[in-house]
Image 1 (spheres, one colour):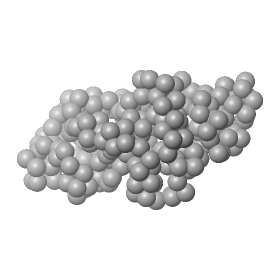
Image 2: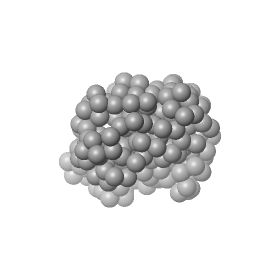
Image 3: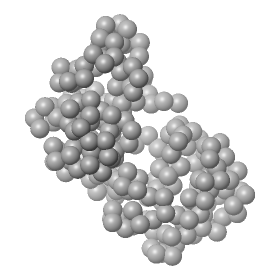
Image 4: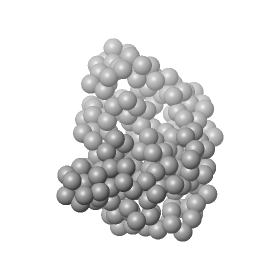
Length: 224
């Protein structure tokens, strides 16, 4: 526990601006862009979302959207038919069950079409300031590399890591690990020689340890 919390403190110093990299103005927008971010990048979603929300700014308008127009707006993200269907079903459910408002409780959010615990925790932590752990591919990979858990199931990872940290820290912990995963601790070639938490990492050496070689692998931002 002490080692894990030390790692988080160092990552907080390394990434003082860590935050959700999806752009949003309200809980509905965050819910939509998080759903849209599956199998694409945050950068692409951020490029598409202004036009999407200019046309359909809330659940009621999106639930009544013209399918062809909605497909056109989300087309650049790939899987546009499936993503259009997800937005239509999600918006309709919000209108029918919650008067068009995004509910601020995990148990309600996960009943919505296309919303699992990961998406629910993103929305809770970043739109409602309700602490949550977001176990995406980066978070899961780093939690295992750092020796915090051996679990691969996202829910089990969430509970195992959550037990190591105060609940109030969960949302920022998620940002710190995701930023570190996107910028240094890559899946195929982690920049071990340029890692600020290498001394506490049992997986040190999976990537290049030479400082110059590792430095060349460091990204200044998340993937484009």
